[in-house]
Length: 137
Image (tube, rainbow, N blue to C red; front, side, top):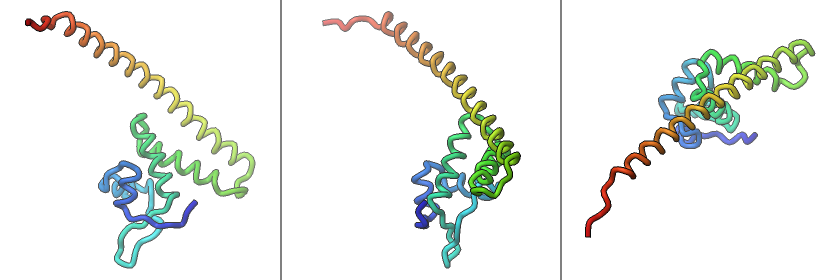
């Protein structure tokens, strides 16, 4: 990935996360700025942005900060290219597979909730259409 550094404002705009949220994720250890400017400003790379996007995508699915940390740890370790023995590699893949299963399950639940909400809105719209008097000349 690109080594270009971005300040927190640009990262916030790209990830659609608030500055406060990004700082919170830093405080909880989910993401660490890749560098600091001479003035002490946080500097992020594309890799940091990708990490924040994983967190952003997990949040609405109900994953906890600990689960986010666990998944990020597993994927970080899988990215160490050849430094894992076969058993550790497979165990990490199993962890990632479990998160994938949990995410898929939650997406299905959300689809069901959305369908019910859309049905409800349509029912209300139909009721209003039946009860709005026609315009008089």
